[in-house]
Image (cartoon, rainbow, N blue to C red; front, side):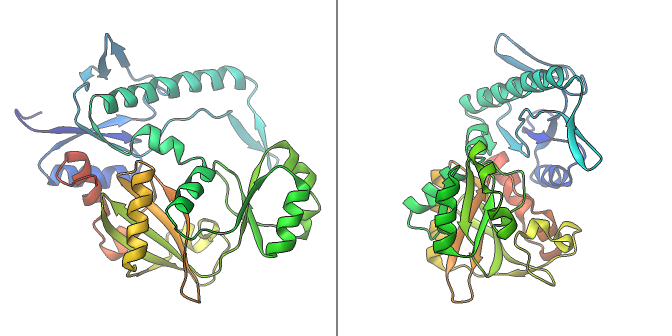
Length: 321
């Protein structure tokens, strides 16, 4: 590293194009980037903490002043697909315990950087909290932001009553990891399965799918996602997933911008992707926040400076709020 040159980190994988896009912008700002590979422990690269000093592949990164967190480690039961079904590996418990230890090490490491005052975009606490969608909804409600009518329950009778009242209902898991589905007749007939764990049931909101990118207090991108036909969940749209979606810039009302800013602050996010529905009758309904949204396709097609905004937060030339 050149003498006096600022060095900041990126926590992610080497095959992630968003990591490389932010790295390029960090270098364009005159700083040096170091990739802290999120899979380093998985592949046996040397990572240590000794007496409070954080060492990554022999390099002391204890004093790194900023890090872009593209992903947050979490432990999952190792499974593979066989005959269209997921089955656990024979040594699944050993693998899971190893993954749990790796995730614990990394999160503790990132929390220590945060305690030392490093600029984390976004910190592991904020990112992990946002996995719990009920918390997001309560934050948005508390700010007066419109959200869909929602039921969280493992009670089949409560779900049936909610469906009878709302009519058009969707459902999804509390912590994400699956696309939204419609609560149709077939699913209603299988509602006893919900007793095993609570599920989010929501009023389906028709209208444009909007993705807003907020860096600090600034909206750096706001678009409507355009595909030939609207899907219940745009992430499940093959046109979107193949990278062939179009995007239309959207001007947000000042009141909606204020609610985006307030929601990000309440969730301790300095960078946020916010999903909103714009209904045919002109309402703006908030769905959720994301601490590490996928955005690069929008940046490449419309030129919105999202990677630059993230780099500015990490380097410290853009105020977090």
